[in-house]
Image (cartoon, rainbow, N blue to C red; front, side):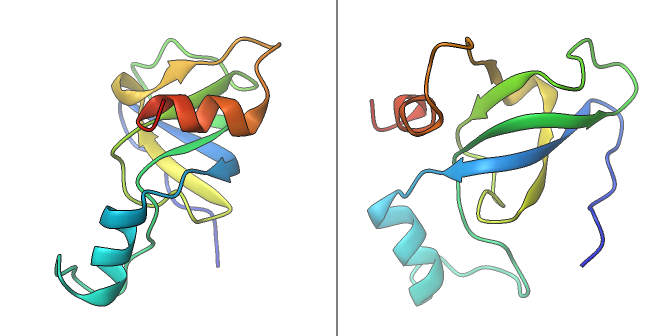
Length: 103
C-alpha cells in the first residue's frame, strides 16, 4: 500500500512497535466496539518521524510515541502532532510504547 498522506498538523511515522491494549484492541477486532471497515487497529505506537505536515515544529528523524490514535499496527501511520511525546534516545522502543497508557 502507498504511504498515507500527511496533512496540516500531522506527522508520518515509521512505526517501530505498537502497544497491545488487550481489551480495546480485541474489542475492535471482535466487533464489540464497531469500526468502519477497512481500519488499521492499534491505539498506541512508537516510531520515527519521516514526514511532517505544515504547522508542525517536530522534525523528521525525531523519535516519538503516542496513545489513543488508531492505526499503530501499520508500517507507517499518520499521527496528530499534538498527540505525540518525544522519546529520549536512551529509552528503548518497547518501553516507550508501554509507558504511554499501560505504564
